Length: 615
Image (cartoon, rainbow, N blue to C red):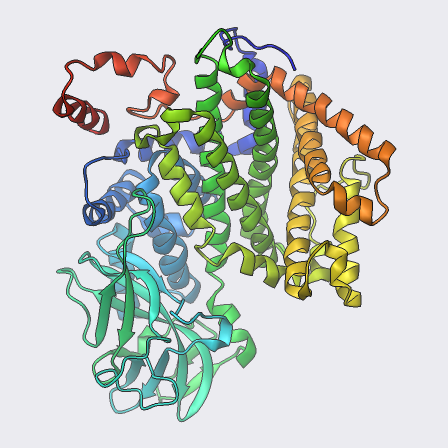
């Protein structure tokens, strides 16, 4: 590959501008405005705090961010474009706030907006959530697992009180919490153990007049303005989780039906499920579809969070490219080492492809394009969050000791990306669920997909169709050395994601307002697709889809396209437009400069410098 020296040469600014336009579309001014608000919150990695101190500061940071964004969380939650940009910018420069944002904006306020603010009870809750006076939470998953109608928590309509009695029943026994809490049905692990005000959307199985009416959403003020728990709610704090940036007050929650009573208006069924003024249950959605309707707000988080994760991968790459251009551990500048270049350009191709796919998935879901409303996020989320995590870990390792320091943000980004793979649904389970709809996956296309695609995408399509055909015939081995339909389904979803990401970048390249940007992005799309094909070389050989001659050509073309990316690494990362991150040497023009302020030799001095950087 080309020798790049220290990357000190002048940037091709026209190329950078064109690449940035392709990356963010018309949202560049919006990114700038949102970034200013995010940086004003000053959510920098802070050392010396206990885990409890870390998570107790985040509600205040969330309130500050809402103020900086104009003062209304409802406005943010109701605007998918604004919300998506906020997640990307906050993921980079406000990693602690990110952990609260999805529950607050996508889940709690998303459920309220979907149902409509039609009663005084909902209005009061929405008002507190709007300003951040209370933090919004979703209470869906149970300790024994929750998949659709298998939810154990119940909400029983009691005409005597004109409301619902929320309960955590003991399976097969009398549901009396005082005698034996039902551990299986306990809600796990909403962030409710701390004493800040919290309002939760609780999924529970409605019991009405002795009938099971399916899983529906209910609104509960869990902790009041003083942090006191609502009657009948019991919370046990859980152990700390990995990563200080993602510190949250997770808890195990049970409900006592003798005390935990919700008003009639707490049912967030909107115009499709309600208790009438005469005390009758009215629902226009079939029983088996009620949980899916209840879970609709999850779709926003399934796009926003992974787009935030991939934004941090972009940031980490920008930091490592800049650092590697300065770092000279011997005679060779780090950026000129072949293995370093290989890792960076491989990651650049993947991050560009998945970044473009993430933005397109967000736009298509917001437009209500079927099947992008539900199926699209289930394909995009595992691909984006998995790619982000892998790239971040690579960047941490290439950055060496710098990559370990929280002041350089990468450890916090890794912790968040790792958590995102579980948030809004485990990635692997999501892949299995999506893959069962194998016919629909084959019809999942981007709107501007041309009739003729480049040769490097055709093998991705062939792999996808071969696995889908095998699933249709019950031949799950068509997916590779796997066993069972679930594993094949997960492989199919991954294959669909790779095809969509490569196609998204190919389409984007054709729109580039600069010929050099078009050529560069076409090479990025080719490098990404060929990398995926090369990785599955054994599979293609087994299925007779790759000869030795074809493998040789893929090998040669992959090197050629990666070399093109290596020649323009500086422009590719400059187009990410990563903000200046306070107290982060890895992202400085001179990474040594922040350390020149160190004086003295004792630990107190070093701690003081750390505090100054974080303040």
